[in-house]
Image 1 (tube, rainbow, N blue to C red):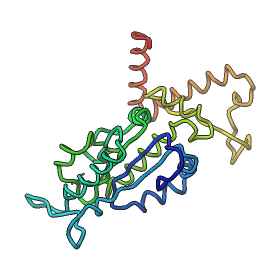
Image 2 (image 1 turned 90 degrees about the vertical axis):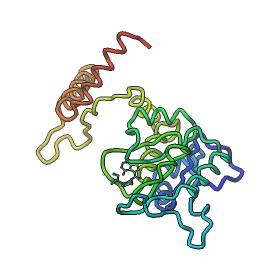
Image 3 (image 1 turned 135 degrees about the horizontal axis):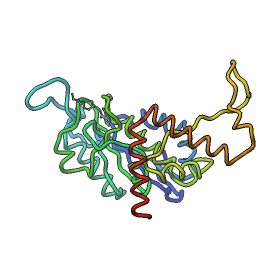
Length: 250
Ligand code: 9D3
């Protein structure tokens, strides 16, 4: 995003190790994160493992020992790319995006936001030589239980979720604080804007009442009801957290 010239150091520095920088910079340049980059709040720099190959074909993958479909990313070019990032930029943590990693959620986003810098390593093909996970990165991270074609979408998800927690990225910085503070949030209450009636559906009267205490009560009840109906797993965690915070006030 920046080539690193005379501008002040960004508030948060992401390094991405990827064979496909254009996949990432295309998205990041066009979004609200593009503006955050221009304003120096975040910086994203890319390192390509292919630049650390030594053969004429610039080979980054090879067949798996033991057989099987697909190719595996070779360890050495990836390790050298990561080691160059570590030496030049000293990221607080190096994270390999992997379907076998710790599951990303809002708590992990808040944890990463507090670090100030992060190196995200993207694999391609059917995975990465296991010795990279064991020797060169600090942790493995998955963004969910589905199969992607590579780590780049995972890195974008992490950059997006972490960036919006940083001061100044959103117009309304308070909105992000609200949710991140409660690691296990309930679902949102429903939102309405004009017109008051649309295709036969009226906006609930309470929202037009001007009674702010009653509106707050209604919204709280909606959040509980909707979470119970749609995400009972979140409700269980929320109840557990509420009980825990009564036992040990922070
Ligand atoms: C048959 C074994 N496959 C694992 C389910 C191999 C494999 C497929 C696809 C290994 C890696 C990939 C590419 N995926 C990622 O790099 C990835 C990912 C994902 O697939 N799901 C959720 N989170 C992530 S983070 C990186």
